[in-house]
Length: 62
Image 1 (cartoon, one colour):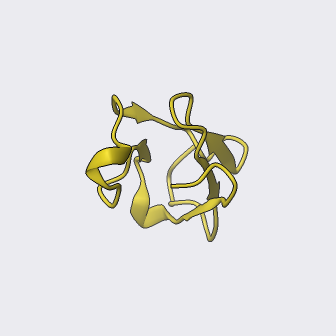
Image 2 (image 1 turned 60 degrees about the vertical axis):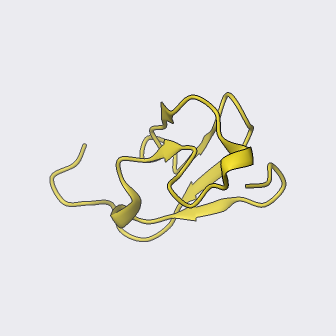
C-alpha cells in the first residue's frame, strides 16, 4: 500500500482494518481498525495508507 495512492473501500471491506488481507508480508504492522464511514476516508496511523470509502453505506449502520 502506498501513502500516495488512496485505497478504495466498499461495504464488502468492512470492518476495515490495516494491514488488509491483501498486504504483503513485508508490509505488515499491528492490526488497527479504521472508521472510514464517519468522514468517508481514514488514514492508518502506522503506515499512512489512505482509505477512501466508495459506494453506498451498509444499511442499518450509523
